Image 1: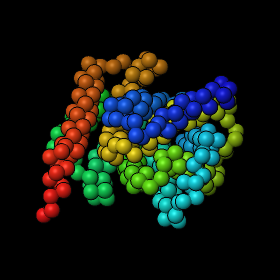
Image 2: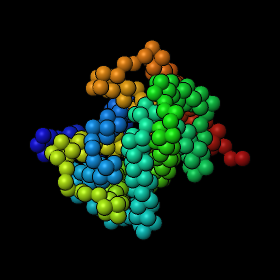
Image 3: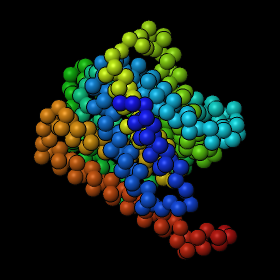
Image 4: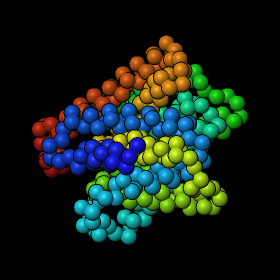
Length: 328
């Protein structure tokens, strides 16, 4: 693989990121939402293929993403110069929580199965919804909550057939759960920061901070950061391009237009995607029980999105607008 190929991938991703917000509609957001959902499904598969320490994988995943983004970042220099000291502190905090998420979740895959680990990831929307309520005053409607519950239930059904019960598996599941809590804090920080800076600036700086945190961790742990075969470097690069550029980077862009909880719901596609990829790559069979869970997950996700769309239409209706304009 030449360096031009990932740059071409990145250029396509940046085309999505730099879309004119004035021409966007909820329908046009579906495509990048689906792209990001598919992209993150490759993460656990790529992590499993690598023999490098998970913190080294995380370091190069974020460093390569940062370096691929950097040539396109010069247009954002005016926005970067406007950042306050508080903004930089919050960006560093977002980078820390993202590094913590990757470290804990990627480490969990060494102790438990991909399916068991993804069960914990399905709780991400719950963490985000709770944090969004307290920090963003963002409250979900009953239909959205029902859709979320159905979708999470379906995702758990997909993964439950491989749920670990040993002490080792329990430790891995616990790491994944803590990693899920960490990414929830990252999403809330992102939602707040993206109200005053472009998503490209946010992603570039946060990914850079994340790489720095991983580098510091690897130095302290004494891990080698250079002695790896070419196949490992290829995996590092794929981790940067697929689940990061077309996954997390697109997530950050979507946070400008969608609720934090809505974006976090995309993680529910990971058990479906990971199970399908495991079937194709590792020959793992998918049971009828898992297929039923996949159907529930999709139905719940559609219900959630429809309830969100209906809620926004009611919020923006002439009657609602007129009601808001009437003085009390």
